[in-house]
Length: 323
Length: 248
Ligand SMILES: Cc1cc2nc3c(=O)[nH]c(=O)nc-3n(C[C@H](O)[C@H](O)[C@H](O)COP(=O)(O)OP(=O)(O)OC[C@H]3O[C@@H](n4cnc5c(N)ncnc54)[C@H](O)[C@@H]3O)c2cc1C
Ligand SMILES: Nc1ncnc2c1ncn2[C@@H]1O[C@H](COP(=O)(O)O)[C@@H](O)[C@H]1O
Image (cartoon, rainbow over all chains, first blue to last red; front, side, top):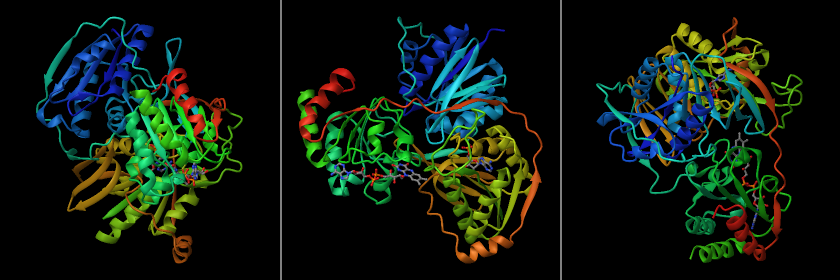
């Protein structure tokens, strides 16, 4: 039988997420190297950007629809994926390690008797074998593993794998499957949104503040810079614990893991638990008045000075650059 | 109601680690181990639930003899009894989940608390794996938890907000920071914990699906450039970000 890969995509509010395009690009790469074909699947009600899928991967897209499936339901999503994947006999299943992917991947692993590696940051081929790298011990070490099960599931850390475009957009092959009686024993009743703010886990640029910002009222310095850059505001645990910032902004081991293109750490010392959440960022800038602060060991560029003096000038310079 | 809480014994995140001679694990010498921080939150939620509805709490941990320390710590916080599923093998998440599922099934616990992730291998999968093996409902990464009759409601963190999830018992909840503030063990708690029983059960061999090939240190990044010590360095920083890094 022909060997197949399933790229499991995620929609929120009717749009396929950016991290799913990363999943598709990796599926395309593996399919070419391993001579396999790719199917993609997405679950939801109406989805507006299905056409974009074919810019990243030459695949058949299956859209499972039902009005009650717009919001995530672990029981319903699991059942749909498990039944479909068992029928199609996929050997490899890829998905993004987002909050939804993290929740769903282990469930389908049990349903398909598959092995699972979560939070992968690299998938390398050794002949036909996939060797996975993932950070462990709060990013202090890297582990390499391989799966010995017949069906293999890999969940990919968002923002790490590149969403490489195909040279030429592939033909759009979309089929729609209406789901009957989805199993809603476990269902999301509603979503409580953090008012219109960009989430650190999804932002391409993050400006984070730590105890060096000295008080909640001074976070305007961070917010103004973030606004100029179109960035999300992040925070260290010290300032979250102090009640200066909400927990959803916390970056680090007990907060969120982020890999933006640019991470600007202001008044953050760079404790190991903070680094665990952001050291896979592509570029790191540190602004800290202590030149020996550990944050400088992971920073690409740093200014060892007073953030109160530096940030307003930086915000001004960015404004100039953008205009 | 009988409530289970599953805990793992992990290196304190602040300690330095060294790779052991086998190139597959860490050298435990000089590493201080603690009750996994998320599991501490799970223990607290189990105790709060018991205080509200009555019943008893049993703590389960899998590993070598050293995990008894972590079981003891949970007992000192107020858990009633401990079960040590003993093995010296390094199990993968599937084997851990299978062993936990077997134990939960035989003890008849319909409500189980775990941590959202164990801070050693950072897998974040055992809660959902165990629930699926048992056919239990489950909600992961919870910052609130409510039980009314057999209806379970919890809020779980997602990108840009929270999902309010509803399901019913039997159920596994995995704890995220923010769910509660774990209590300290009182002196009395520590004293009585010494008298509480820890049942020991030997775990047989388990099949593995995930083969551990290598553990290595990440390649240290080249130390970055410190461009200056005041705002006179800003222009150069912006230029580098724009022209060299091309991120703005
Ligand atoms: C189990 C566990 C989990 C944890 N999880 C997390 C986590 O998820 N995220 C996290 O961030 N932390 C976490 N921590 C806490 C972590 O160990 C640190 O305590 C925390 O990150 C410190 O925050 P900070 O850098 O803001 O504060 P500090 O360490 O106090 O650093 C403040 C920095 O600001 C600088 N500064 C002061 N004034 C100025 C100025 N005017 N201009 C420029 N710089 C200035 C100082 O030089 C200093 O380096 C965890 C700890 C534990 C034990
Ligand atoms: N060895 C173990 N013994 C008991 N519970 C465990 C063990 N390993 C993991 N768990 C539980 O599963 C949760 C998630 O762990 P993990 O999926 O390994 O990150 C932990 O927070 C614990 O509640």
